[in-house]
Structures are given as C-alpha cells and as structure tokens.
Length: 480
Image 1 (cartoon, rainbow, N blue to C red):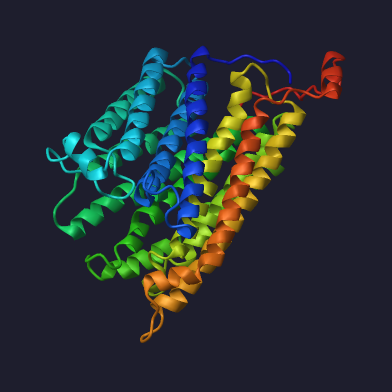
Image 2 (image 1 turned 90 degrees about the vertical axis):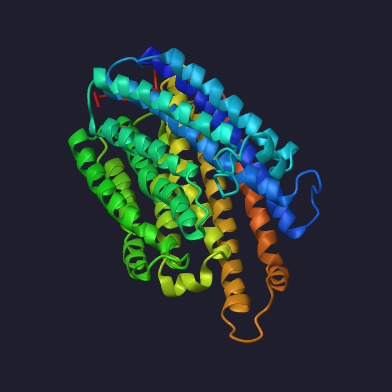
C-alpha cells in the first residue's frame, strides 16, 4: 500500500468513467438474472418488466458500460503513453455527464414507455433507426452517442498530436476511431431486409470481432508493460502480430453472418475459412500474456491486476476463439444458428475478451487513482476470489447453455420428420436453464466480492510491516 501520485493530473477523469462502468455492469447482471428467471417462470415481473424490455436493457447496459470502461481506460492510458496532459479534462468530464444522463434516460424510456410509443415520441419517423437488436436506441440517443464519441476522439487525438507516439497509443486510437466510424452504419436502415442485416453486421460484428480487438490488445499490452517491466520492443512486436491477424480474420470472418441472409453463396466458403482462423489471434494473445509475465523484470505489487490480465487472455481464447469455432463452419452453423449454442459463445466471448480487459484496467489504475501503488494484500486476495468466482460462474452458465443448445438442435433442428416445436423444446431445456441461473447467481456473488474489495483496508500485519518499513517494499519501477 505504498502511497503514489498520478503522473498526470488529467488522468483523474478516468475514475468517473470506471465508477459508472461498474455501476452499470451491476445493473446489467441483475437484469440478466431476471431474464434467466423469465425463461423458467414466464410471468416473472410481468407486466412491469416484460421479457422484451428486460432483454433490451440487459444488452444495452452491456454495450454502454463497456464503452464507459473503454473511455475511462483511454483517458488513463493516453496521457501516460503520450507523456502529456489531456488536451481538455473539462471536455472529458462534460462528455461523461452527457453520456451518463443520456444513457439513463434511454433505459428509463425502455422500461416506462412501450417501444412503439418510444419510437413515435423520439422522432423515429424522421430517420428510422430503431428496432434492431443492440441498436434499439432512439434517434436522439444515437445522435448523442455520435456527439460524445466525436468529442472523446477530438480530446484524445489532440493529446496524441502534442505528445509521444507509441505503438500502444496508436493501436488504441485505431480501435477507437474504428468503433466510432462503424457505429454510423446504425443510421442506415434500408427497407431491403438483406441489406439491412448486412449493414447491421457491419456494426455488431466489426465492433466485437474487429476494432474492439485492437482496443483489447492495446489495453492488455499497456497493463503488461506496467506490471512486468518487459521491454516495449518485445511487446510491440507481439501487439502488431496479434492485431494483423485479428483484422484479417475479423473483417473477412464477417462472412459467417452472411450464410443464410440472402447474400451470394461464396460467403459460405469465405466465412467458414476465415472464421475458423479467428481463434488464432486469441491464442496468440494468451501465449503473449503468459510469455510476458514469465519474462517479467519485476514483481509488481498489484498481483490482482496481473491475474485479471492473464484471465483475459485465457477466457478470451475460450469464449471468442474456441466457442466461436464450435459453430462457425457453415454446415454446422446451419443447425446451431440462433440456438443456445450461440448464447453460450456470446456470453463467454464478451466476458473473456471485453469484460475482463476493462476490469484489468480498473484493477491496475484505480488504486493509483486513489493514491496508492496497489491495493492491500487483503483487498487483492478478495479480488482474486472474485475473479475465480465470476469465471467459474460464467463457466457453469456457458456449459449449461452449450448443453441446452446441443439438445435444442437434436430435438428441433436435426429431425427431418417429427421435430419438436420451439416451445415444446424449451420445456425440455428447463434443467439446463436452472443450472444457468445458478451460474448467474454465482457470477453476481463474484461481482459483489469485486465491488467490496474497493472498501477493504490493510490487515494489521500489513500496516505494521508498512510502518516498520519492511515487507511491503516493491522493487524499483523501471521506466516502461
């Protein structure tokens, strides 16, 4: 718990974004548990929060809190990488409150107003953008997101221009600019259903399997630079290799969403081949993380952040890589698309690749934002328990959903005659859904542990060692 100070005062704005991200993350998990219960108890919370509203809130909170996490991470990382203060800390704070209020009002709108009425009162007839999964936001909210994103990118770009340029900073900015530009496709909503789905995947797929992977790589590399002391040249080479494979496989891998929506048949081959290669950058990321930790030049006092970083690489490979590969080939996807196998992949991929990397950044940066080099050993022990509890809980959920998906295919999709109806099949999956719910409760318990770790102080032994000048001294930090 050695005291420390921020290298650049403007990094302090990241704290607001991190706190909001964790609060919204908690809300997302609570709504997820509600959805899990609605699968089993159909009228749970009805008519107050019906399934369609709860699902919109659950998925939108996921996107919004991850964006808060990315923005907070960038506001912390960029000043340190550029070795200069943020161009405008006041703009960063103003955009935070605009984004938070707009997001909160949108969630209230989802819950308080029927969706058709919400579309009517928010001017959807002027530019029809609502009604698509993940992009359900009303037009004013979408426009607000664009304004916030442009202000955010202006702030970071001006900071980059006046400061040092590093590989980590440049890769991060590529990812953030790509995120903002691809979101503009959410305003394109053609009447032709094939083109509509194609443009929709330009946002959803090229976010999570394209530019977000650049953000993931940059954030993970930054934390590993700071916690291991490995030379930047080594980490830069790994980073460039990973993002090259991520972009190649991610862009052409979009084809696995084009199989059955009306686009030319050659996408079945392109999508299958390049989607099958998508696990490669995630496997490289896992090798990269463990290799850097093994070659570390110092034992950083924040070992909890190192655990989150390693967990990101492993769980990202399992969720985005392995579980994606399970049903990415077109002959397999023909049967599994839209089943609980898809849900299993989605949950583990988002958790492994993006939830964990944001928590990694928060775990590393938040102690410094609070004036200490690392949390107490007692707090870190609780953090580590929270990692294992959340990861095991997610594993239980994913295995339950995978089993449910396999049974769903067997009963509903494979039989040429006598296939069960959708609802009859759902009744057969109830046991898997109860197991999924148990995993969700375990995940929530892990998240609450993580939140509690922020309020855990040092033990009496740590305090005595600290005041005695003994055991808690870390090795001198090297300039990264």
